[in-house]
Amino acid sequence: MKNLGLVRSFVCVVFYTAYSITVSAEALPVGNQAYTLDKFIHESINKYSEIRLADLNINRLAYEMGKAESQLGWILTSQGGYSRDASIYGLQSDTVDFSVGLQKLLESGNTLSITGRYARTKTEQVLFGFAPNPSNIANLEINYRIPLLEGETNPGYLHAVRKATIEKKISALEKKQVKEKLILKLIDVFFAVVTIDSRLVTAGKSLERAKKLHLYIKKNINLGLLEQGEILQVDSQIYTLKLEQQKITDLREKQVALINRFLEKELVSTFIIDTDNIYKNKHNLNVHKTIAVVIENNYEIEKLKVQKELIDSALNLSRNREKDKLDVVLSLGVQNRRGDIGNNSINDTDTTGMVKIEYRNALDKRAFSSERLQLQIDKKSNNERMVSIAEDLKYETFDLLKQIERSKEIVKITESRYLNETKKYRDILKRFRAGRSTTNTVIQFDNDRIRAELDSETEKYELAKRFSLLKLKQGFFLKQEKSYENTIK
Image (cartoon, rainbow, N blue to C red; front, side, top):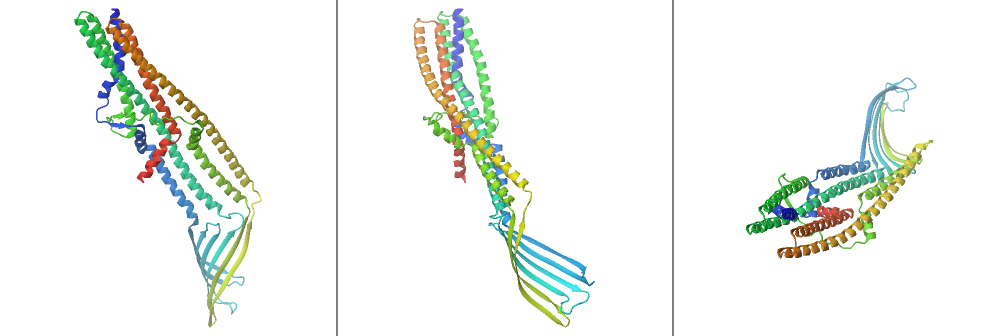
């Protein structure tokens, strides 16, 4: 009975390790599409709905530039009307008056306007013989306004254009943020499947050895060396391990469903994880250079930088608004005056012109100064956040690099341990067949070898995952996507 217990334990350990080769034939049908991490990320990003929403927002903000640039467009003005009035002499007069004008703000901040006006006035009777009745006056005038203080260099227009540009950049960085969060999820899902598949491979090997042990015991029962109860214990353990196999398969199917959601594939779609290149390009990393690259490619810091540009632009606009308004207006035009005077008529055309200065001063400037002070506080807060995020990234990256270095050492140790445990198992198996070792020792050594194999594979994938997380922080995956987008354009 002691041997029965030992055999049962041995089969349990062996079958669990062999479990995955069988699953590779059952859960991963031949001909399935193989996915590397890069391919998985690329296809998922192109199909993720939140990325498409971010693109729509960027396209929407593109129209803000048109709104800003429209400030320099021509503006059409017109007015007209009829009036009846009485002069100081009690004479009633009827006037029809209308005008049409075009006005344009120039990029320099100056304003150009062209106005045409026509007025017809008729009085009930003529008081003085030299005044035409009815009189027709038509004039065409060009005005040019030059701001000398407030509005000089057109800060309002420049701010609107800069604001539209920066908001589009911010929207693009928010898309980058969505991508990074998605890639982080994809890395977790990818390596979860990789680890499960590793367990399946190890379990498949265990199952094969369990079957061999089953045959070995059966032969020895026929020779009278072992009892029938031992084969029953082996069969019971095989059923138990098959149940465990189904549980792990179910776990993989849940991950497959999640991946199919990211890839927008059919519910029953399956795939194979390609791990052939998962350990390539794992060079030693320079700490300071790596930290600098991470900070340079961080979307939060990039976003704060462009927000700083927007704050600086708003500050310039605020300072300009605080200035007094002093404008020079130049005007040049022609006027035509026609009408009847008794039995005669007149038709005179004259040149008109004007130069004037307009001044305006807000005596209470607290609104302007308060706005400027608030913006200065916003600028300092923005700078503090940049410093804080950069410091956090520095320590996070340093810790991740240390984890990578520790993982490299752990992988070496687990690989050496696995090789050693394999040699131990083969040696004890030879001695067992020669009758120089017990079944309990064989089971113990095989159990140690299986744990060493699982630990070695798990640590390898953990190291690969940490490298992938570092690549994400360095912007590697996003640069790949940008390069691909440029090629298809």
